[in-house]
Length: 102
Image (cartoon, rainbow, N blue to C red; front, top):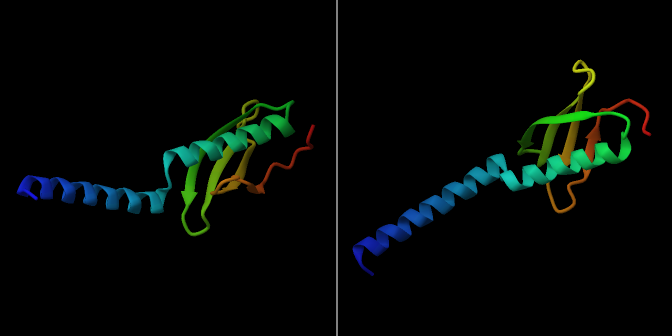
């Protein structure tokens, strides 16, 4: 192996290790997007009369959950929390909406 080839492989290895560490702490953007879609789908299926805005998604590393803040578009004072399990099915663990389902 030449010196430049070794350097290239070392740089690639360092970048991969940094990406794996970052993914462990913050998760990846695609998984966060899928979790947000799960929340939006749940809201559209169960609360058809209401209009919600899904925001502030972040990853809780210890619990391996995504936490989203959902606000009612018609009344911004109404704010709810959703927790979504990170994984294949992205199941909803916690839903704080206390209005009657349609």
